[in-house]
Image 1 (cartoon, one colour):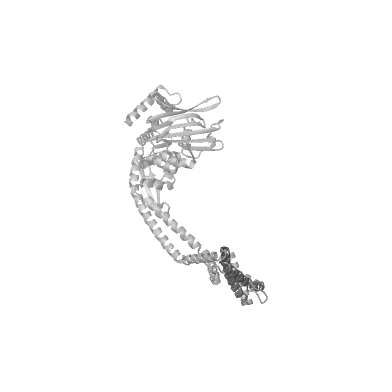
Image 2 (cartoon, rainbow, N blue to C red):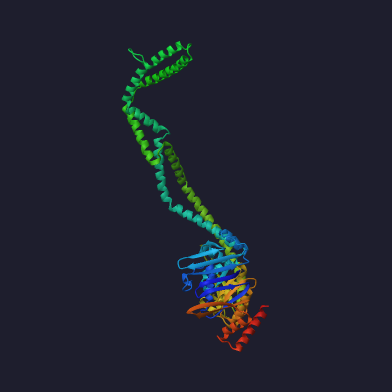
Length: 558
């Protein structure tokens, strides 16, 4: 619950600190004294939209701080989920500061965003005001209200899951159908790539071999001349010995003295090894000298093959391995596309099945709503009669719609406040006072579904007076039983039932306006109730009536 609210430099409030506890708290005061500013300040720390214009004139910054104690475990779980720190004593401290160019939000000292404040604020406080009355006229809100009552089971969650699954299937089917033409074009391009690479019959290592063969053909005469000269140098001729024979002679000489010297023996062995290597090289060169050469047809074939591989490399990969990988990928992609027709039909069947599942879940949810509507109607009717509408008839009327994110139901709340009148939509017949009571009745009925410990009612008394005001006061007191309720009111009957009463007043000094928040004792409460009913300077008779009103309220609360 909200324990302490501290306000600095918000509009005409220079500084205020308000302590709250459980029970019914009322704020009263003249129009313009600052009651709405207090609620705006609470809204600021809850993440509601605010304006830099709230900063007090002449000041550079403003700040609101709210301390919450006895916080529910669900709130602490949300704090952990949001990655915010926990306090040591289990409380939650929220602050929001404003300057001319920026604002800073903090939770337990950690800087955070307005969006996170709003998520956390929704778990801490519910604010009901004139906007809620207007929302009662929006039939789109009626279904949400009924679902709050029908939320014992998991029918809504089951439907929402089934509907999301259907939407996912439907979107995939639409995209696949719309992309069919593009897939066909892609399949044609893949087929061209596959055909081109398969016909090329690319083989790893082939490119380098072809390059080597082309260099040999391009330098054939030069190579043959060098081979012939090298062969002669190794083998010798009629007039001179070649390197191989001379090496053999040198080896023979060293062998002849091998018994005389270890060094000579080593040299003989090395020369013998060289001789054999030279003979092997000579045989290889001799074979090259005897080569048959090449034809122009072979040269042209090698050139064409090299050109083909170069062209393919520019399209599909720099090496033979990359080209073959491109071929495999193209085959895989074309195979996937070739199954698209089957996939399309399969997806159509899956989408139809998902639709049937969603429709079935919507039917179950609709049945649950119809069941909940019976008890909801009875309880709201009882609450309205307690709120001085003895002849009221409240009705939940169902309609049907195409399957959507809320199911297949439309819901309207109808009411008749007078005998003999058929129930009609709220927007057509409900007065301001009736709307306030209808809203309070609905909030009372749904209160046990809502675990939020702090509820704020902003001018719940709009348009009501007399006995209806007495009824509203009793109802607010009951709603505040076991939780914290903060209420802005202009009615003495409601203020009399408060467990804590704050007077909001304003004064002017040195050319500036100041708002004061004063907790009232019994005497102060009597004077404030007398002011509400009688004016600025209440008479003794009015004070006596106010004290009687407080005494009666205290007795009735017991």
